[in-house]
Image 1 (spheres, rainbow, N blue to C red):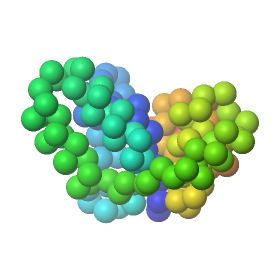
Image 2: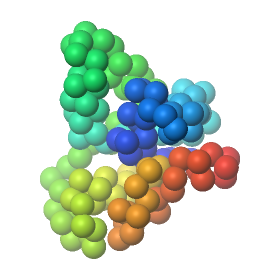
Image 3: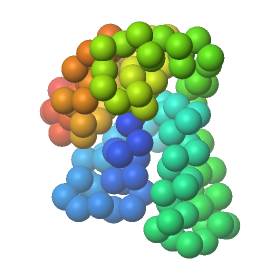
Image 4: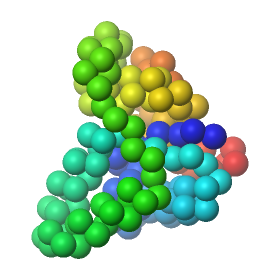
Length: 136
């Protein structure tokens, strides 16, 4: 199963953000054990690095964490076409629309996010981490 993981879920796991960390960390384990084909977008990687650095204040540690992330998750490129198609989607948040456009092009079965309501106009269904885990 191909799934795209939203930035907020990745950060929940990496920063142990309660009460969301447990479900997010289970997704990491599923990806590491290859029980799911989990992806993040290339643009999410830069956002994750930035937010990790704000939390950790350590360049080397952030690089190590991103390296681990890249080893566990596939990376979906963000293309110019994705940027254009995101503008056509009936979604208020452009960043979420871009994620949805990438998910469609990458043939993802779902987007795992804590912000399901923001993906109302997405061509790929969005599910909460707990709901995704219950379905497995």
